[in-house]
Length: 253
Ligand SMILES: Cc1cc2nc3c(=O)[nH]c(=O)nc-3n(C[C@H](O)[C@H](O)[C@H](O)COP(=O)(O)OP(=O)(O)OC[C@H]3O[C@@H](n4cnc5c(N)ncnc54)[C@H](O)[C@@H]3O)c2cc1C
Image (cartoon, rainbow, N blue to C red; front, side, top):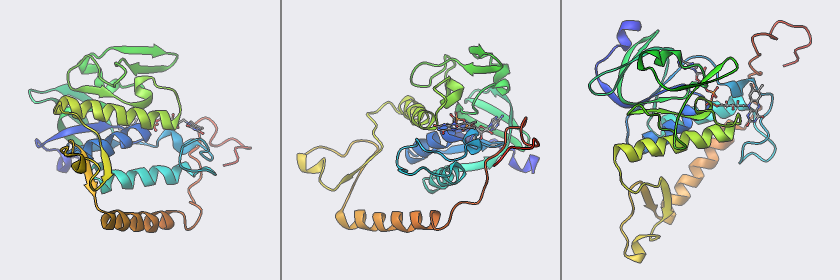
């Protein structure tokens, strides 16, 4: 498997970490036709949560293990590729970056670190870091750029507030930064009703799609069907325990 995954074909973007920030970032980059590979190893921190009650869109809360599955499916539906692999070492190449993992070596023009904290795999790049207790974060501007050209960070890795929706929002912010760096055009990932721009004699902006009522109805029926499947039964995966409490009596997950 390790050698099979090794390839010199470069992705436009590799995202290290398939948690809330990384997956959200990949939805936006893939929708902008930036070829996107997400490398994930281990479980998103949100899978330790019991029930997620402050993520918008779920009035009575949502099982976070289900939410991560849904965001993974959304990333793949929009064209991102997800691989299980642990990033071990990132180096510079002429075209961008080389990422060595336990499953093989990958190349990309741009790289997003979204692996929560402690990015030791970036040591060869000598990135600017902030230490806080046992955690190490990457220094970025508000939009997710690091001072290293082509290297971004999203979510907790960029020391954003420790809430899932904040990581999701920052994943999206970082993606749009990357998209605009790759092609510095006005960019909104929007779906608008047919005529919203064109009936005002305006071109449909980059990233925007105008759709007919018929197409809107088709997409809504598909959305209802997909959501009914997800929520037909309670999701059965229990919270991932913290390593220090998993064998202790009284941990009631
Ligand atoms: C017990 C608990 C309860 C919580 N409850 C809530 C809540 O109720 N509401 C709320 O808003 N937030 C809650 N949170 C916080 C929320 O889970 C985090 O803020 C959010 O998950 C951070 O998103 P992220 O994408 O930055 O990191 P993560 O979601 O943790 O994603 C990082 C991903 O990168 C992977 N990774 C790490 N290193 C590598 C590597 N070298 N190569 C490849 N992949 C790697 C990790 O395994 C993980 O999958 C809770 C957290 C915990 C621990």
